Image (cartoon, rainbow, N blue to C red):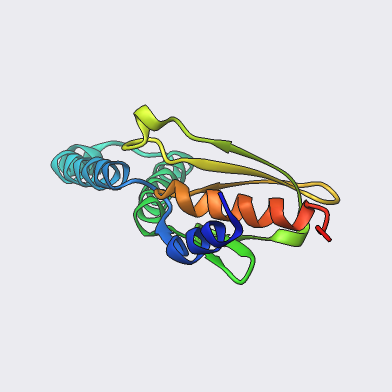
Length: 154
């Protein structure tokens, strides 16, 4: 791919949901099913004798499942000004200059349910996974990293 093509890819793929549409829809369906099951079982759950620890664990697990499901639906991956970021429970960010190595994990035949992901190893240690429903966004970031590490041509 030429430099102009790489630049066009970077501009065209700046923002994307972190997870594919089917995965987000599956998360919504599973969360809705869990909520409905909880409402259906609420009378039995209210009658049960709960220890304080059991109640805290049950409530914490419920909140965590709902919280993570919400972030699967809401999470976005963005490439802007040489920085790749993904909103999540915490926002993950990495700049092109901080990258030591990359590994793109993409299974085209499972793309509808398994998001392409980029394993980023940072200079000085640290590993971060970035997910994007649009593999071109991750490829555009990889091209920016490759261009930075290529020796200047005279």
